[in-house]
Image 1: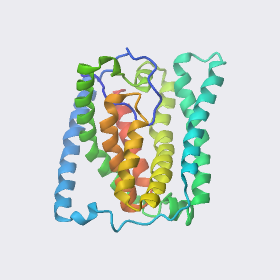
Image 2: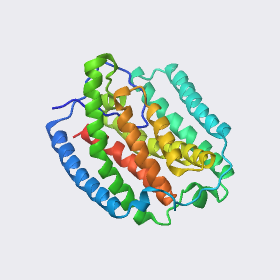
Image 3: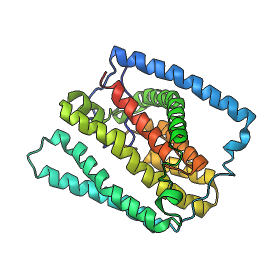
Image 4: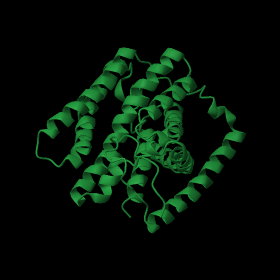
Length: 290
C-alpha cells in the first residue's frame, strides 16, 4: 500500500499533519488501471493536436463579454474567506466534535458563496448566466464526453506530479508533507459524515470553485489581458496557490488548473470544467473508501 500524496481540490486545510492516509490493495489496482487508461487517452489527444495544432492557440474561442473588475473578484474571495471563518467560529461554540468543524464550515461556506457568485455573474456578464458565464446545458452530451475525457487524460499527469513532488518534499522538507484532512476524516467518519464529505468534495467544491476561478477570475483576466492563454495560465497559478496548505501538490494542481481553464476557453461553458473537477475529486474519494 502506498501513501496518498494528492489532496482533494477545493477542500479544507489539513487538521492533523501526522495522520497517514494509505490506499488499500483494491484502490492501488484501481489507481493503476485509471493511470493506464488515462495515459492512452492523453497520447491520443497529443497525437490529434500534432495534426490539428490550431486548437491549442485558443484564437477562435467563444467570447464572454463582461464588466468584471478586480473589485468583483476580490470581493468574492473575501466573502469566501469571511463566510468560512464565521461558520467555523459559530460551530466551535456548539457541542459538535471538533474533528468535523472544518468539514462542516467548508460546506456552509460553499453553500453561502454559491448564490453570491451567481448574482455577480448575472450582473456582470452581458449575455447573462447561460450564454455569458456559460451555465448552459445546451450541449450536455458533448460537454459530458469532453469532461470525462479530460478528467481521465489529466489524471495520470497529476498523480505522477503529486508523487514526484511529494517524494521531493518529504526528502527536503518532510514537515511540509501533509495528508488532507478530508481524506483522513473520510476513513474515520460514520457513513452519514462520509456522505457530507462526498457532497462537499464532489458537488459543492467543483461548482463553487469553477464559478469563482474560471467563471469570474479567468473571464476578468481574459478581458484585461486580451489573451485567453495568459488568462488561463495566471488563473491556474492562482488556483494552485489557493491550495498551498499541501505544498507538494501545487504543481499537480497547476496542471489541473490548466486543463480546466483550457476547456473553459475551448467551449465557453462551465459544464465540462465542473465535471472534470467533480470526477477528479470523486476518484480521490473512491480510492480512499474501497
